[in-house]
Image 1 (cartoon, rainbow, N blue to C red):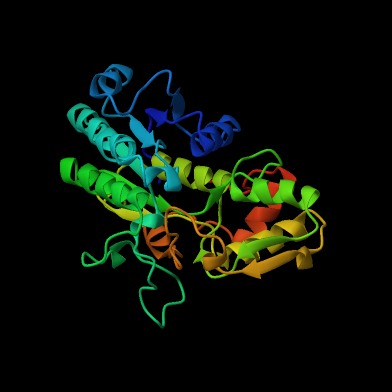
Image 2 (image 1 turned 45 degrees about the vertical axis):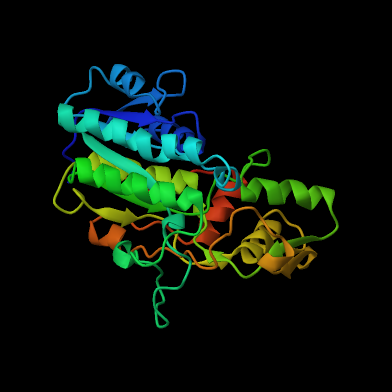
Length: 310
């Protein structure tokens, strides 16, 4: 049921997800007026900048925080930078939204999990409550994002956390994995991609449509204070995703060769398993995101999600 009538303030509006939210909203998939806030408008690491940018926020409004320090490898050296954006930033935001009575929706990540499959018999993936306090996330990025979640819910238990994973827009010039695979296809005869990391590929426009649906539904017991998982359905390894990209652009997927994580060491260890279950999203009465293969086809074709999330 649609209940919200205010504005949707989108922080990080020039980033990958923020841009997708603006684009999907522009086609009419939102009952809320979108107010984009870029880094020019708001420095999330500066409490006074946050307060100034949200000075006219009201209790009818929603703040969607799409800002994150997402350089996973860079965070291993830049602890303070990652903490300032992923922990201090959400703390600044939630203090203002709490004071104004507005609703904060904070975007988080699959990297908050340790990377160990939650249960042998599981077929869906991690549930929101599968965080094991005995196992810390393997990366600085993951640890700071988890702290950011905690600071949001501790300061305002009615806020909502939405975790997602393996986000991409997929354009031929995009810097994400799908865009990179499209460019490499034109540059190399074969490419090697790791086949021992499994996750949930997610098209940014599909997630954006889902977030607009969530914001438009308004504060309800089903979402207030909840941690929700929102990804395209299904799972894939990076190798499987790359091979599907080749298929979608009409290239031979056999040109993609599987390899192991050990073949491509990185400063930050990647989780071997980070599949997110969509049960919590559906249980909140929200439209499940479509299968990742179908979404990838739309991304490569330059199409938005066809689902009306209003």
